[in-house]
Image 1 (spheres, rainbow, N blue to C red):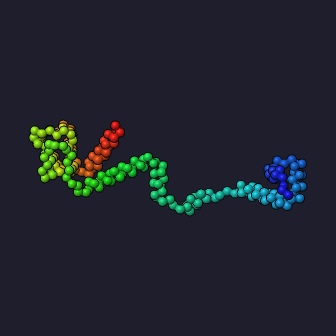
Image 2 (cartoon, rainbow, N blue to C red; image 1 turned 180 degrees about the horizontal axis):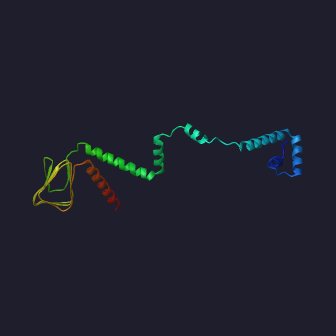
Image 3 (cartoon, one colour; image 1 turned 90 degrees about the vertical axis):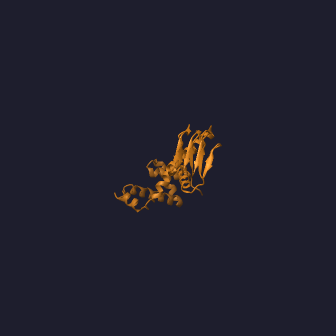
Length: 203
């Protein structure tokens, strides 16, 4: 026979001190006739008594410090990982910049071959690019691992990477002339080039 749910409700009301005399009489009669409910009520009373006792127990003042001291130490890499997870955009930008600088710096260290980006009319002799007197090169000239001698006119910028430039007295350059012979100059040049290409692709 299943006991009515009202009996459990009466148990809780009794323990809370909210039971009317007629309800208390009904509960006691039921507990005398039902061993299962009597056992359950006994366990409830024990739980309430324990909680009342435990509410007066206080931890020692050094408890928190002792527990924290016993915990394993956080590894130094954990704070970095936590910070990286908290700042994903900054992490991605930093990683991109680090990889870009690393690849550019490594390409500077390797021995590159001579190359020139210029249209006619230039003359190339033994890793030296010559803009002849009386000639005009329209557009930018980039010389890698070589030198340039300008006797005519360059209608654009001149960039010499790991080399030297020579300007004759009659030579003219309408744009900027830049020599890149240091790794940091090389890195800055590549960053500017990539940014310029990215902006051109957006237009």
